Image 1 (spheres, rainbow, N blue to C red):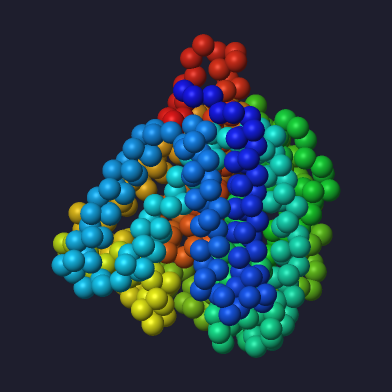
Image 2: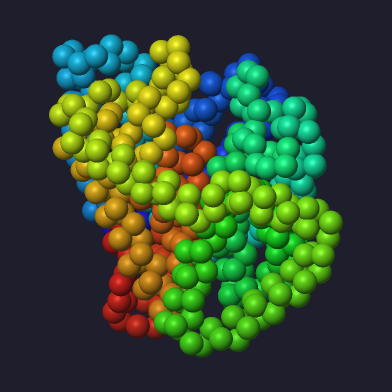
Length: 439
């Protein structure tokens, strides 16, 4: 395997920091600073992604491992399909086609490059930065929660748009992101980093951990989002699995639970948390609770199955199912609904659409094997990041740029952490079991 020049590696790491920064402030730009450029700012990270891919290819950081070979083969097929849709189909817009191809193929390679160039110190810095930012973002969400739905601080991305309502006259605060989905995915990643920080060999400052737990409770209480609660479940399962595979982690696990319970007992009695819980409970009652949620999930599955049988064999047009794609044609609706599997199948047709979805499922499988292998040797962060991104990789709405961005970043941390674990173990063992095979 080609050795990456240290200067190129540092440049790539710097570009990834820019990528993360733009991911975190994309909503700030779209809602408050440059609302007239809201649609253009959807692709604000694309030049950075192109720079990362170009430098990654030149430096050898982007290699044709098994997932990249599969993605490259799909790219060739999708380009040919797009040409056929322009010539023989109803797509008629090269711009929409370009946006569609960008959605499928521009950002996914970044997770593999990130997995190769991030060293332990880079992972630690990223982890601490994400945990440190939890409190200011939570405080912003509290202010949005307390403000009127029509207040400027609750403006949505796009002219005249507001945030999604919750209950009792409140909205679901999006923090610095365009909408609540960004907050959900950020705090899922932050929860994984917060838990992982307790298991770091280089201790994270205690004050950082305490503020992280306090911010997590604040943000969850005022979010009004069931998706945020459910996002924590696979991360908790991943932590439990890591403990079962590595009982030596029991000391760190006890410290984690003790710290969390102590901070929660202090923050829980605050008025804003109690008010947030009251609003959250009202929303659960108004929305029909768990029964209605299960009905919604069943409806999504039925819609996906129906798409496989009713979509045109060559698809209706790459990019047509995204909000941005339809905006280019003068509309602002999800043409094929908000379900990701339905969108992909309708856009690309059943053969290629299902092939792309199977690639995403295969990627989840590879990440799980790599993360489990890392957890066996006491490296917990990869399996926690896997818990934070698995559902997003499998069925996240990648037509929404922030959702895809968090999938790429979190999966990249999972791959990088798995590689670091394999390198660490290989120093003492001649054979590394479950070595990640992304390169």
